[in-house]
Length: 299
Ligand SMILES: Cc1cc2nc3c(=O)[nH]c(=O)nc-3n(C[C@H](O)[C@H](O)[C@H](O)COP(=O)(O)O)c2cc1C
Image 1 (cartoon, rainbow, N blue to C red):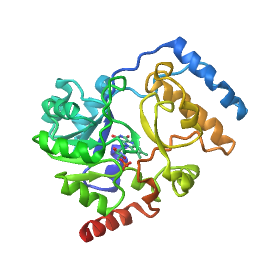
Image 2 (image 1 turned 90 degrees about the vertical axis):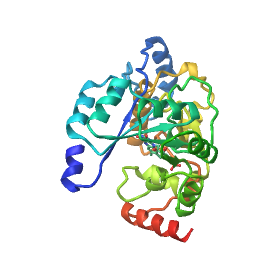
Image 3 (image 1 turned 30 degrees about the horizontal axis):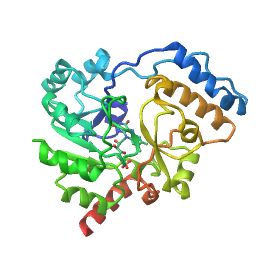
Protein backbone atom coordinates (compact mmCIF):
# COMPACT_ATOMS: atom_id res chain seq x y z
CA UNK A 1 0.00 0.00 0.00
CA UNK A 2 2.87 2.37 0.79
CA UNK A 3 4.45 1.62 -2.61
CA UNK A 4 1.13 2.10 -4.42
CA UNK A 5 0.61 5.41 -2.64
CA UNK A 6 4.08 6.63 -3.56
CA UNK A 7 3.60 5.77 -7.22
CA UNK A 8 0.75 8.27 -7.30
CA UNK A 9 2.09 11.14 -5.20
CA UNK A 10 5.19 12.43 -3.46
CA UNK A 11 3.11 14.09 -0.77
CA UNK A 12 2.99 13.13 2.92
CA UNK A 13 1.67 9.72 3.92
CA UNK A 14 0.03 8.88 7.27
CA UNK A 15 0.04 5.16 8.08
CA UNK A 16 -2.44 4.19 10.80
CA UNK A 17 -1.92 1.12 12.99
CA UNK A 18 -4.00 -0.68 15.61
CA UNK A 19 -2.19 -1.06 18.94
CA UNK A 20 -4.58 -3.30 20.86
CA UNK A 21 -3.48 -5.81 23.47
CA UNK A 22 -3.11 -9.25 21.90
CA UNK A 23 -6.45 -11.06 21.64
CA UNK A 24 -7.12 -13.82 24.14
CA UNK A 25 -8.21 -16.96 22.29
CA UNK A 26 -11.11 -18.60 24.18
CA UNK A 27 -12.43 -21.51 22.08
CA UNK A 28 -15.51 -22.29 24.26
CA UNK A 29 -16.64 -18.65 24.17
CA UNK A 30 -15.97 -18.45 20.43
CA UNK A 31 -18.00 -21.63 19.81
CA UNK A 32 -20.92 -20.26 21.81
CA UNK A 33 -20.83 -17.04 19.78
CA UNK A 34 -20.76 -19.00 16.52
CA UNK A 35 -23.69 -21.12 17.69
CA UNK A 36 -25.61 -17.95 18.38
CA UNK A 37 -24.90 -16.81 14.82
CA UNK A 38 -25.84 -20.14 13.19
CA UNK A 39 -29.48 -19.19 12.48
CA UNK A 40 -28.34 -15.96 10.83
CA UNK A 41 -25.94 -17.81 8.53
CA UNK A 42 -28.69 -20.38 7.83
CA UNK A 43 -31.06 -17.61 6.70
CA UNK A 44 -28.64 -16.95 3.85
CA UNK A 45 -28.06 -20.62 3.00
CA UNK A 46 -24.57 -20.49 4.52
CA UNK A 47 -22.80 -22.18 7.40
CA UNK A 48 -20.88 -20.38 10.12
CA UNK A 49 -17.10 -20.89 10.21
CA UNK A 50 -16.03 -23.85 12.36
CA UNK A 51 -13.54 -21.73 14.31
CA UNK A 52 -12.43 -18.12 14.52
CA UNK A 53 -9.02 -16.58 13.94
CA UNK A 54 -7.28 -13.44 15.15
CA UNK A 55 -7.47 -11.69 11.78
CA UNK A 56 -5.24 -8.67 12.56
CA UNK A 57 -1.91 -8.68 14.35
CA UNK A 58 -1.50 -5.76 16.72
CA UNK A 59 1.30 -3.34 15.84
CA UNK A 60 2.60 -3.76 19.40
CA UNK A 61 3.62 -7.33 18.45
CA UNK A 62 4.52 -6.89 14.81
CA UNK A 63 8.29 -6.65 14.31
CA UNK A 64 8.03 -6.82 10.52
CA UNK A 65 5.68 -3.84 10.42
CA UNK A 66 8.00 -1.83 12.67
CA UNK A 67 11.00 -2.65 10.47
CA UNK A 68 9.02 -1.68 7.38
CA UNK A 69 8.13 1.73 8.82
CA UNK A 70 11.70 2.38 9.94
CA UNK A 71 12.96 1.69 6.42
CA UNK A 72 10.10 3.27 4.44
CA UNK A 73 9.74 6.28 6.76
CA UNK A 74 6.16 7.41 6.10
CA UNK A 75 5.86 11.04 7.19
CA UNK A 76 3.33 10.14 9.91
CA UNK A 77 2.43 6.99 11.85
CA UNK A 78 -0.69 7.14 14.01
CA UNK A 79 -1.81 4.76 16.74
CA UNK A 80 -5.34 3.62 17.58
CA UNK A 81 -6.39 1.46 20.59
CA UNK A 82 -3.27 2.14 22.62
CA UNK A 83 0.35 3.09 22.60
CA UNK A 84 3.20 0.75 21.63
CA UNK A 85 6.02 -0.10 24.07
CA UNK A 86 8.68 2.57 24.56
CA UNK A 87 11.40 0.95 22.38
CA UNK A 88 9.01 0.72 19.42
CA UNK A 89 7.99 4.35 19.75
CA UNK A 90 11.67 5.31 20.04
CA UNK A 91 12.54 3.39 16.85
CA UNK A 92 9.89 5.38 14.96
CA UNK A 93 11.07 8.66 16.51
CA UNK A 94 14.69 7.83 15.60
CA UNK A 95 13.52 7.33 12.00
CA UNK A 96 12.22 10.91 12.03
CA UNK A 97 8.54 9.88 11.81
CA UNK A 98 5.85 12.21 13.20
CA UNK A 99 3.66 10.28 15.66
CA UNK A 100 -0.04 10.72 16.46
CA UNK A 101 -2.28 8.71 18.77
CA UNK A 102 -6.01 8.57 19.53
CA UNK A 103 -7.20 9.35 23.05
CA UNK A 104 -10.73 9.09 24.44
CA UNK A 105 -9.79 10.41 27.90
CA UNK A 106 -7.27 12.68 29.58
CA UNK A 107 -5.44 9.64 31.01
CA UNK A 108 -4.98 8.15 27.54
CA UNK A 109 -3.83 11.54 26.23
CA UNK A 110 -1.22 11.80 28.99
CA UNK A 111 -0.01 8.25 28.31
CA UNK A 112 0.47 9.09 24.63
CA UNK A 113 2.39 12.27 25.43
CA UNK A 114 4.67 10.56 27.92
CA UNK A 115 5.38 7.87 25.32
CA UNK A 116 6.61 10.59 22.96
CA UNK A 117 3.81 11.20 20.44
CA UNK A 118 3.83 14.63 18.79
CA UNK A 119 0.05 15.20 18.62
CA UNK A 120 -3.06 13.62 20.12
CA UNK A 121 -6.37 12.93 18.38
CA UNK A 122 -9.26 13.69 20.76
CA UNK A 123 -11.78 11.07 19.67
CA UNK A 124 -15.19 11.88 21.15
CA UNK A 125 -17.99 9.41 21.80
CA UNK A 126 -19.82 10.76 18.72
CA UNK A 127 -17.11 9.41 16.41
CA UNK A 128 -17.87 6.84 13.74
CA UNK A 129 -15.93 3.58 13.66
CA UNK A 130 -13.94 1.97 16.42
CA UNK A 131 -13.61 3.80 19.66
CA UNK A 132 -9.91 4.23 20.36
CA UNK A 133 -10.14 3.21 24.03
CA UNK A 134 -6.96 1.49 25.19
CA UNK A 135 -8.84 -1.07 27.33
CA UNK A 136 -12.37 -1.87 26.12
CA UNK A 137 -13.18 -3.57 29.44
CA UNK A 138 -12.30 -0.56 31.62
CA UNK A 139 -14.83 2.06 32.75
CA UNK A 140 -15.54 4.52 29.96
CA UNK A 141 -16.58 8.12 30.69
CA UNK A 142 -17.84 8.42 27.10
CA UNK A 143 -16.62 11.98 26.75
CA UNK A 144 -18.07 13.88 23.81
CA UNK A 145 -15.85 15.67 21.29
CA UNK A 146 -16.50 19.14 22.72
CA UNK A 147 -15.56 18.32 26.31
CA UNK A 148 -12.71 15.97 25.41
CA UNK A 149 -11.10 18.38 22.94
CA UNK A 150 -11.20 21.21 25.43
CA UNK A 151 -9.86 19.02 28.24
CA UNK A 152 -6.95 17.78 26.14
CA UNK A 153 -6.16 21.27 24.81
CA UNK A 154 -5.95 22.50 28.43
CA UNK A 155 -4.09 19.45 29.81
CA UNK A 156 -1.58 18.45 27.14
CA UNK A 157 1.54 20.29 25.95
CA UNK A 158 1.07 19.15 22.32
CA UNK A 159 -1.30 19.89 19.41
CA UNK A 160 -4.74 18.29 19.65
CA UNK A 161 -6.78 17.08 16.66
CA UNK A 162 -10.55 17.00 17.28
CA UNK A 163 -12.50 14.00 15.94
CA UNK A 164 -16.09 12.85 16.22
CA UNK A 165 -19.30 14.17 14.71
CA UNK A 166 -17.58 16.84 12.60
CA UNK A 167 -19.12 16.82 9.13
CA UNK A 168 -18.61 20.26 7.60
CA UNK A 169 -16.67 23.52 7.77
CA UNK A 170 -18.84 24.89 10.57
CA UNK A 171 -17.93 21.84 12.68
CA UNK A 172 -14.22 22.26 11.90
CA UNK A 173 -14.43 25.96 12.84
CA UNK A 174 -16.05 24.99 16.17
CA UNK A 175 -13.23 22.52 16.89
CA UNK A 176 -10.58 25.14 16.11
CA UNK A 177 -12.37 27.62 18.38
CA UNK A 178 -11.96 25.09 21.20
CA UNK A 179 -8.22 25.24 20.69
CA UNK A 180 -7.80 22.18 18.47
CA UNK A 181 -5.00 22.51 15.90
CA UNK A 182 -6.90 20.46 13.34
CA UNK A 183 -9.99 18.35 12.85
CA UNK A 184 -10.21 14.74 11.70
CA UNK A 185 -13.28 13.70 9.71
CA UNK A 186 -14.15 10.07 8.98
CA UNK A 187 -17.84 9.61 8.23
CA UNK A 188 -17.88 12.73 6.06
CA UNK A 189 -15.75 10.82 3.51
CA UNK A 190 -17.62 7.49 3.50
CA UNK A 191 -19.99 8.52 0.71
CA UNK A 192 -17.18 9.96 -1.44
CA UNK A 193 -16.64 8.40 -4.87
CA UNK A 194 -13.27 6.92 -3.87
CA UNK A 195 -14.50 5.17 -0.71
CA UNK A 196 -14.85 1.38 -0.64
CA UNK A 197 -18.26 1.56 1.06
CA UNK A 198 -20.65 -0.85 -0.66
CA UNK A 199 -24.01 0.08 -2.16
CA UNK A 200 -25.95 -0.90 0.98
CA UNK A 201 -23.78 1.23 3.24
CA UNK A 202 -24.06 4.23 0.90
CA UNK A 203 -27.82 3.85 0.59
CA UNK A 204 -28.22 3.60 4.38
CA UNK A 205 -26.06 6.68 4.88
CA UNK A 206 -28.22 8.65 2.48
CA UNK A 207 -31.51 7.55 4.03
CA UNK A 208 -33.31 8.12 7.31
CA UNK A 209 -31.11 5.35 8.75
CA UNK A 210 -28.29 7.92 9.01
CA UNK A 211 -30.17 9.51 11.91
CA UNK A 212 -29.61 6.41 14.05
CA UNK A 213 -26.13 5.39 15.10
CA UNK A 214 -25.24 3.08 17.98
CA UNK A 215 -22.15 1.93 19.80
CA UNK A 216 -21.87 -1.83 19.33
CA UNK A 217 -19.33 -4.45 20.26
CA UNK A 218 -20.97 -7.34 18.44
CA UNK A 219 -19.49 -6.73 14.99
CA UNK A 220 -15.79 -6.79 15.86
CA UNK A 221 -15.44 -7.43 19.60
CA UNK A 222 -14.56 -3.79 20.37
CA UNK A 223 -16.95 -0.86 20.81
CA UNK A 224 -17.54 0.92 17.51
CA UNK A 225 -20.20 3.35 16.30
CA UNK A 226 -22.26 2.02 13.41
CA UNK A 227 -25.50 2.88 11.68
CA UNK A 228 -28.22 0.94 13.45
CA UNK A 229 -28.72 -2.21 11.33
CA UNK A 230 -29.51 -5.93 11.58
CA UNK A 231 -26.12 -6.64 13.16
CA UNK A 232 -26.34 -3.92 15.82
CA UNK A 233 -29.86 -5.11 16.67
CA UNK A 234 -28.64 -8.70 16.97
CA UNK A 235 -25.89 -7.53 19.33
CA UNK A 236 -28.11 -5.29 21.45
CA UNK A 237 -28.80 -7.83 24.19
CA UNK A 238 -25.50 -9.70 24.11
CA UNK A 239 -23.44 -9.15 27.30
CA UNK A 240 -19.85 -8.07 26.55
CA UNK A 241 -18.51 -11.14 28.35
CA UNK A 242 -20.14 -13.42 25.77
CA UNK A 243 -18.34 -11.87 22.83
CA UNK A 244 -14.96 -13.11 21.62
CA UNK A 245 -12.06 -10.67 21.90
CA UNK A 246 -11.30 -8.17 19.16
CA UNK A 247 -10.46 -9.01 16.39
CA UNK A 248 -11.54 -12.65 16.77
CA UNK A 249 -15.22 -11.62 16.83
CA UNK A 250 -14.58 -9.60 13.65
CA UNK A 251 -13.74 -12.86 11.82
CA UNK A 252 -17.33 -14.01 12.49
CA UNK A 253 -18.74 -10.56 11.73
CA UNK A 254 -17.05 -10.38 8.34
CA UNK A 255 -18.13 -13.94 7.47
CA UNK A 256 -21.75 -13.17 8.33
CA UNK A 257 -21.67 -9.94 6.30
CA UNK A 258 -20.23 -11.83 3.31
CA UNK A 259 -22.91 -14.55 3.56
CA UNK A 260 -25.72 -11.99 3.80
CA UNK A 261 -24.34 -9.74 1.05
CA UNK A 262 -24.10 -12.73 -1.31
CA UNK A 263 -27.90 -12.90 -1.00
CA UNK A 264 -28.38 -9.14 -1.41
CA UNK A 265 -28.76 -8.31 2.31
CA UNK A 266 -26.41 -5.48 3.37
CA UNK A 267 -27.67 -5.10 6.94
CA UNK A 268 -24.86 -7.12 8.52
CA UNK A 269 -22.12 -4.80 7.30
CA UNK A 270 -19.81 -2.78 9.54
CA UNK A 271 -21.58 0.44 8.59
CA UNK A 272 -19.41 2.70 10.72
CA UNK A 273 -20.80 6.20 11.06
CA UNK A 274 -20.57 9.07 13.53
CA UNK A 275 -23.33 11.18 14.96
CA UNK A 276 -24.06 13.85 12.39
CA UNK A 277 -24.07 11.23 9.61
CA UNK A 278 -27.09 12.79 7.87
CA UNK A 279 -24.80 15.71 6.96
CA UNK A 280 -22.50 13.56 4.79
CA UNK A 281 -22.25 14.40 1.10
CA UNK A 282 -21.48 12.29 -1.91
CA UNK A 283 -18.81 13.78 -4.20
CA UNK A 284 -15.17 13.20 -5.13
CA UNK A 285 -12.93 13.42 -2.04
CA UNK A 286 -10.87 16.32 -3.44
CA UNK A 287 -14.06 18.27 -4.03
CA UNK A 288 -15.17 17.57 -0.45
CA UNK A 289 -11.83 18.82 0.90
CA UNK A 290 -12.17 22.00 -1.19
CA UNK A 291 -15.78 22.41 0.00
CA UNK A 292 -14.75 21.99 3.65
CA UNK A 293 -12.04 24.62 3.16
CA UNK A 294 -14.53 27.04 1.67
CA UNK A 295 -17.06 26.42 4.44
CA UNK A 296 -14.37 26.86 7.08
CA UNK A 297 -13.47 30.22 5.55
CA UNK A 298 -17.12 31.28 5.62
CA UNK A 299 -17.52 30.14 9.23
C1 LIG B 1 -15.59 3.97 8.13
C2 LIG B 1 -14.63 4.39 9.22
C3 LIG B 1 -13.44 3.71 9.37
C4 LIG B 1 -12.52 4.09 10.37
N1 LIG B 1 -11.34 3.43 10.47
C5 LIG B 1 -10.40 3.88 11.35
C6 LIG B 1 -9.11 3.30 11.39
O1 LIG B 1 -8.81 2.36 10.65
N2 LIG B 1 -8.21 3.82 12.26
C7 LIG B 1 -8.50 4.87 13.09
O2 LIG B 1 -7.64 5.32 13.83
N3 LIG B 1 -9.72 5.42 13.09
C8 LIG B 1 -10.66 4.96 12.24
N4 LIG B 1 -11.91 5.56 12.21
C9 LIG B 1 -12.20 6.63 13.18
C10 LIG B 1 -11.72 7.97 12.66
O3 LIG B 1 -10.32 8.05 12.73
C11 LIG B 1 -12.30 9.15 13.45
O4 LIG B 1 -12.02 9.02 14.82
C12 LIG B 1 -13.79 9.27 13.28
O5 LIG B 1 -14.18 8.98 11.96
C13 LIG B 1 -14.25 10.67 13.65
O6 LIG B 1 -15.64 10.72 13.77
P1 LIG B 1 -16.63 10.98 12.51
O7 LIG B 1 -16.73 9.65 11.83
O8 LIG B 1 -17.89 11.35 13.18
O9 LIG B 1 -16.01 12.03 11.65
C14 LIG B 1 -12.83 5.17 11.23
C15 LIG B 1 -14.06 5.85 11.07
C16 LIG B 1 -14.95 5.48 10.09
C17 LIG B 1 -16.25 6.23 9.94
